[in-house]
Length: 491
Ligand code: NAI
Ligand code: MG
Image (cartoon, rainbow, N blue to C red; front, side):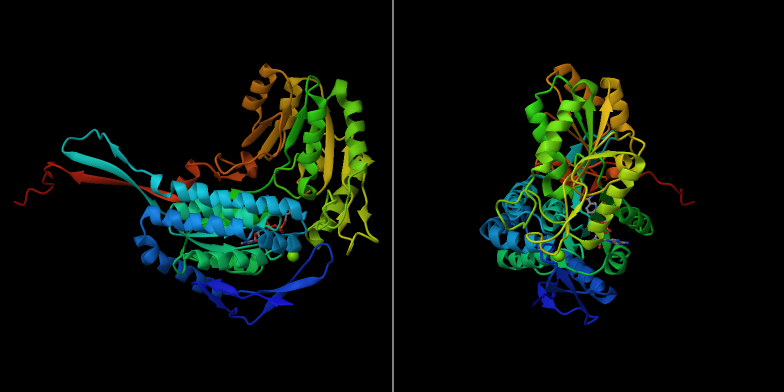
């Protein structure tokens, strides 16, 4: 079995505790690698290395040179995309072809933000005082802590790290205990690209242990988190002790709304890939589908038919369309929600069971599942399942769709299917969500901000503006001929 070491200050080191834990392959259920179980001593070493790098060669690089390093990293990721995808897919169980696509696309984040590094400009401010010249500098915040979940370890780390490096910060990564291996593989590419020591560090272990000690470390200036809302709340509270800068991306229960005037072939595809991509284990999953009454029954029939025919199986098999559930606790959580939905009176029209036996490996599979007769007050409509379970709700008209769509604590994303320009504009304005897709779903890019309204989180990742989320503005006042008035007469 492969045994990884921590990556601190460009060196591979054993964890101070001398302890490792196993990570498994969600398909086979077999452990395949040993991950270091870091303790507070390792946390301290990593944060100090990252602090030292801020004073050392990293800060003396010009922004253009910093950008070139990021460019090199992107090229190495492209070169090694197959290898990175193999590791990531083995650890998280996502379809290999999807993960490979993600790896190749990830390189573009480093190109985009590498290119931006020398284009972040300050400003000269026409100040309302005579004899003063005022300008604004943007400076890195310092050590950025990235904490990520198990569904997309490398991409979600990249969403944080590319703008953070662009801004001149240094990084400590704490990936999920279920999917840490790929971050170590990425670390090798940082060394090969020629990043100075301490700029990028990987510390692994469990959330409440090493995660919590990193969050409360006084040397961490900024925390960028993606994960569940429970952990998000704890991290936000702990960060308040030192008033650390925090961004949180906490998932959702996104409405995917189909009007009767939509192109229904497109909408069916959008509804299915909206919920079932990555086996439903995505924060933007369109897990609440709102169907206008007049098309409800026929649309449900089409979705249910396609769902029942989905090919569930080995993520390495190119024929598979849906893979296993990444973690054992998540598998149980999803089955629990299927039970809750049934007891609440929702009607299951596709799936609904766990799958085991030949072709299903260790049996960590849940059939893609569709519930109808869901009302928006049910738990299956209000809570994030994070699995292949769709809830379908009826609505009457635009106002009804807006009311139901927004009647939820989350606000990450929303989809709208209509051929009416008026409806499209109305919905894009009235839906309370950080991303609204009109006649498409799941599109994403490094060029535009991503993040949540309401309890889906705080802050945005992506786009030019996201670099400033990792910088402090400094206002500098220079006297040109201001005479300091005497406060004390000196008599
Ligand atoms: P989690 O939110 O517990 O873990 C995410 C990351 O935070 C992991 O790296 C974990 O080690 C770390 N963490 C946990 N507690 C921490 C603490 N007190 N201090 C510092 N770091 C901490 O997610 P988990 O357990 O993997 O999944 C729980 C639920 O979260 C899922 O059932 C799902 O509903 C949701 N989830 C949402 C995701 C999203 O993209 N929004 C992604 C994954 C899970
Ligand atoms: Mg694993």
